Length: 310
Ligand code: PMP
Image 1 (tube, rainbow, N blue to C red):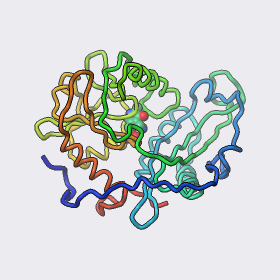
Image 2: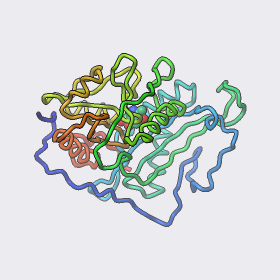
Image 3: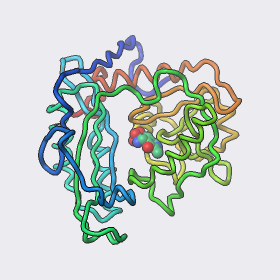
Image 4: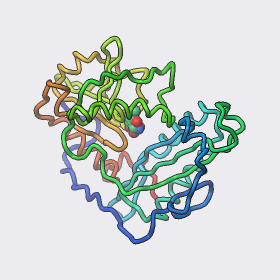
């Protein structure tokens, strides 16, 4: 099996996961100004706090070999955020959010970090009509390492169903995430790392914050489902591996040679097991992880267009 199309002969370089630690308090961008996080306040009657009326993104910034840093697929993240804002009827100035993301990373002098833009509805009423409410935008950047950690993931099929796309569009609307929180929490109480959503017909949807891919007989398949978030990492991996994107029943996933999950924060994470089905060696996943690491750190010349230098 081979990844398509990059040259994999280069040995993977070690990721430094270096974080610039300073005594300076964390800076955030809030409604047009960069300020200390601890002085930025919002009212308790903030609409989004009560009803989840907001949209966010999760974006990664990585150190590059030249001593700088670069944001991975910023344009794609902001386009998805724009779709979420449009679904809520919120104003969204993409160029402004783009600049805010870069400004806050620079202000914090972060390199290996997670960027969190959030647009939300504020005050003016507590009824459900969004039109009279104030709208706000903040961007935070936080020092970061992959949220699933380095170990192989132990998944469990969740008793929860994923939000149906017909009820909540698969976008990063704040309220959508209660569904993920419930599933993640339930999986944790049974000792698993992560929850795998399956639909009523037995098709795999996604995990609480990752999309799912599998390898069988050397062929890579990306699980496709209308209720799953259209992941940017998933799209990246499809491009890298020429994976087929199609619906996958749980039985087929359990029969795969390798399973891995992916997301901006999780990156490419190998799956050790799904309930009592264990997956052994994951050579393809390891190779793909190494390639992804090189790409996000700007070490693969043909993918430099995916990086925005800070
Ligand atoms: N599904 C869900 C529910 C998510 O929250 C995420 C993380 N954004 C993903 C999939 C992966 O998406 P992406 O690769 O764009 O981060």
